[in-house]
Amino acid sequence: MPELPEVENVKLSLEGLGAPGQQFAKVQLLSPALRTPLKKDLSKRLPGQKILCVRRRAKFLLFETENFWIVNHLGMTGSWRPLDNGDELIKHDHVVFEFGSGMKLVFNDPRRFGLMEMVDKQSLERHAWLKNLGPEPLEADFTGEYLFRVTRRLKSPIKNVIMDQKKVVGVGNIYASEALFRAGIKPTRPAGRLRREEADRLVERIREVLFLAIASGGSTIRDYKNSRGESGQFQNLFVVYDRLGQPCVNCGTKIRSRFLGGRNTYWCAKCQR
Ligand SMILES: [Zn+2]
Image (tube, rainbow, N blue to C red; front, side):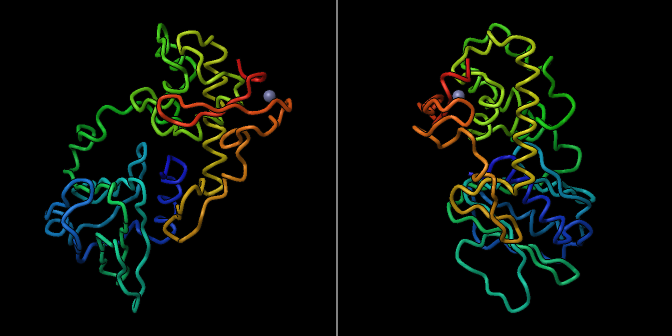
């Protein structure tokens, strides 16, 4: 499933393809529904609108136009690609953006867990998908002081807390394991027992892992590709994730694994306390 670094890379590749500045000529809805129904206002109200910018909030891609935001989630298998003249549409293509310049962008999603909706400019923050989200991990308001404050008296494991989108967005399963390893904190530690300096360190490590993953183009676990068809490389830099039974890169102890919050979790029992 695409996580924050992969969605950030899709955003960057859409920028690289020149999406900002394009004016909609036509929007084709090829199927009635993704995870929720595709509404006709996408095809009726977008023509004439210009894309001002592409942003990311948590794992949502946001296309800003003069009057609207298009809110898009890649779900499990969603992807964007340019459609050149002469290219055919393929199975699982759901939405085609056609621009005045002749450029076309296609949203493809075999498993249909993706989402696409448009909202009026001023209603974005109140949108059901966005309104309860915590701070962005790479922005200034996600600090050690913040993490320390929101974890006080919490008994749930720290890993579950940093994966809770209401506390901080976009720290997915892989990145949570990797950041906790680098911070020397055991994933099962009750969050309320995090010390202040550990909260500082964990915030730094979360940022470090996410920046590294973004710079590597994300992780390619199944078949993730950005909108230029490029795969990510961060899976080659995992130090703890998916390394059950292999020696810890710091101390040689065998990496352990268990389910935590329903997700595979990896750690070194010696380096992480
Ligand atoms: Zn170790």
